Length: 280
Image (cartoon, helix red, strand yellow):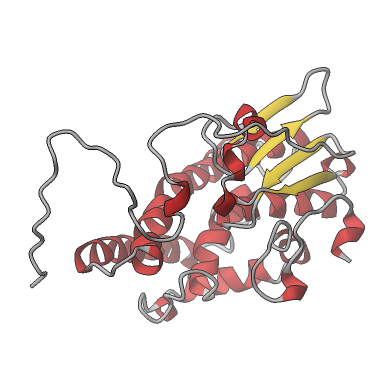
């Protein structure tokens, strides 16, 4: 039986002096910039400001897939945003994304620069801009968007929920870990059942839905995030593992997950990307 806590919520919440855990130094209850700093601008119309978290990888994978498919207009500059140092709270970044979360994109290909923020919105924007990785037939398009938005709603339970309490919280607490582990396993079962009858998440075609889901759930079953594979018995989800392995082997995915990456094996890191040759 879980140990009883003596904590009683105050009538009016006030932020603690420190809430501990990873990223505690940048957590705050207000929005807006903390300091003045302009964002750099490179030579390509598409300017990405990001970090190779699962959300950041979604966009660089799509950009590399677009380039591999022959869309030369998808060339981009990828600038590193060090979120652990609070770079996402600069005045320049807040202008691109008032929510101060990576990734954020500026498209300078038109008469006026256009900002796009939130990873799902960026995927949808780029897929429509280049007419790729998003079916045009109504049923297939709708199914792709179903799964794209499934990821948007589900991943916070995996990342901010399970990932936080299992890997980053200052102390291990049974109730939240059990609560979120239960939900993550349910989500993996949802995916496994879908992939039992489909090569890719939305059907027989590789789409932005796969690119959105793979950096989270593919990485989870491959042991790339939270080191929780044994804890969650990810070996049970054979169809997710088959799909994850197939996506991981794609050359554009291999390149895309390197961009803005500053952890792991040196050969898998590329802090910034400004030309295709940077990935050679």
